[in-house]
Amino acid sequence: MTNADLSQQCESAVCIGDRRIAPGRSAYIIAEAGVNHGGSVEAALAMVDVAAAAGADAFKVQVFRAAELATPDAQTAAYQSDAGGSQREMLSRLELDDDALARIQARCEARRIEFLATPFGQDDVRRLVRQRARAIKIASTDIDNTLLLEVAAKTGLPLIVSTGAATRDEIDAAVGRLREWGAAGRLVLLHCVSSYPTPLEAANLRAVAALRETFGVPSGFSDHTLETQTGALAVAAGACMLEKHFTLDRRADGPDHALSLEPEGLREYVSAVRQAERALGSGRLGLSDIERDVRHVARRSIVAARDLAAGAVLREDMLALKRPAGGLPPAKLDALLGRRLRAAVPRDTRLTMDLLE
Image 1 (cartoon, rainbow, N blue to C red):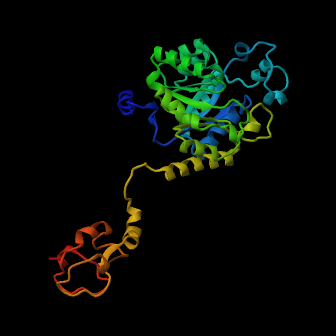
Image 2 (cartoon, rainbow, N blue to C red):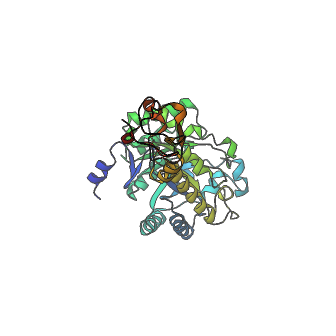
């Protein structure tokens, strides 16, 4: 498919490759490896295979240079305390170089899953452009990073921006800047709760619809809960994109493994989302084909309440409403009163207009 074809197909929607991201469409599921590869490209390649087998739409890693992201004395978060050392020391063990990114992207292409990444610096954005990434994810922590937002916006690529730990004013400001830089028509906002893990009762999934209604862009959920059903709940709340951390082994060393799903959990997560989408349906009002049988046997017709003679003038006590359907419906009852029968009618006969004068 050419760029022109994609452009025409994606009018009025945000597109990543040939996938349209919009309310009412199948949710775009990002399997977030993050740094759970532990800096090993072989582990990352195995994770691509897991994400593809689970049915995810995209596989995502994080791209950074530790020395450019954190000062030597930057401390780890409470949930990262087992990583040991400073934040920079931890991150330095989790970097992926350009060769690793190229190998990961090639594996994604082979497995027919989209390659995505979260850059944490301006040069990281440029690295992703060189890798021909087809969208850029901005982490919640950088929603106020104007330098990063601007260089990302000016790539012309779709932008996925998480809103965790951001105030309403900060979200307003970020969206305003991105609009100024021409990114409004290619922006997806992800509701996110920056607590690792997020308790289910703190997920606040109604914020998904609030983002869409407030800013007029597709919205989704960056899911840090431990449950496998939260994605399905988010889809029911209006999410058209989901992001979920996963790992090969929750017991592995590293900052994010304990809050991530293992392969079977990821498969369950994706399956639950797709089941929710099937249950949600199209939202169209009216009779569906699978209801026709029950409609026929359970709806009522106007019938003779007793044996009626030819010439009888119909009164309400001469008529009854009984199953099945197929005769005149109950709503026609008043229209029959005072009408004369052409012929004798046995009890329980469904009345039709050709029996009346």
